[in-house]
Length: 425
Image 1 (spheres, rainbow, N blue to C red):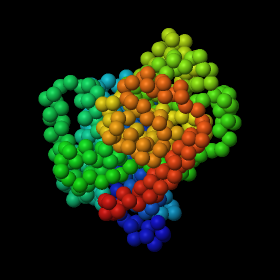
Image 2 (cartoon, rainbow, N blue to C red):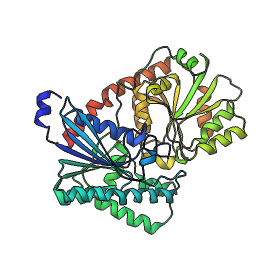
Image 3 (cartoon, helix red, strand yellow):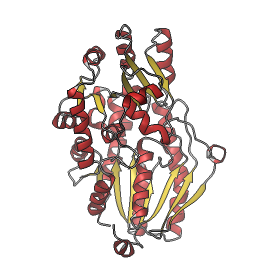
Image 4 (cartoon, rainbow, N blue to C red):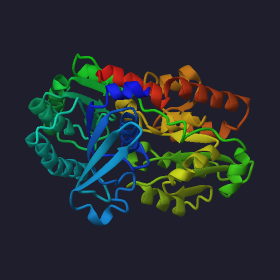
């Protein structure tokens, strides 16, 4: 935006309420941080009510760990746009092994600590031009709704993950009466928010099935200054300890049960005789230790586990891989859209995804020829597909398609300008 435009909107104020924020390197926290940074750079005064960075490690990260049991205020100044971002961090219970019940306790612990900041804003008469609440967890929307009623601010309820539907479909909880209450509460939120948005067309359609109202598409994006294609990938492989002719299959992201990552280990076992096929599982999460135990028991020498990579190395690390695995169970379907897919496309990566026909991910990959698709919950078919792949002319074409798609639809400036128009700020 021009400096004159910045002057015109300098007094516009945006509040984000979310459980995840920068400096979390992946997932919702990453996108929240980039969104608020873009708004601040483009002339908006921003406030954030959040907690301390804990994802994807499921442990509060340094240098916050020692002070994470109380509230903290941070201020980031943007001299060029004459704006600030004020971050209020609230204490949160973080389970090291997050089961369904522990996740519920975590979500409500954040709600009870965050409400004091919300009440403080109400008492001081603070008003915002837009309040953004991020689901999951869905009930944070009620804090936004409370502020909306008291201050007259507009409320956007943005859904990154259909958490309630996923919990039911994946049998994370089994109490039907509880689900009935939660769905009713969610429907109430959907009806009272000024705006509702989500990250994929499939998720938008599912939300509209819950309540007949306008829902706009607000997809995750790629920051091309950070994620981009690199040349000489053979050298990158040797830098990471692999041979030039190795075919690298990489999974990078959260390591939980819904990702069906045990299917990677079956593929690795099936292809042990082919020394050039190598697998990398990068990230952290509650299921990682179990996967490492299975790998050791089966003596899978073609599988390597790595921690979450530093931001300075992440783009190089992604570019090293030949194929990027985007796995989820069939029941997850359009209940979530893996955020890792946008990052993969941004650096021209070729994906191997498990998705059913009719889901957003399936349709996207098929329509634009961005990679390969295997049937979810069928590890033998995934393994068979992996055995047929090698970097060739088709591989190069898919890389080019990914880069074109990212430049046309996933650029952060394009996505955020459309967002600002949709919420009328």
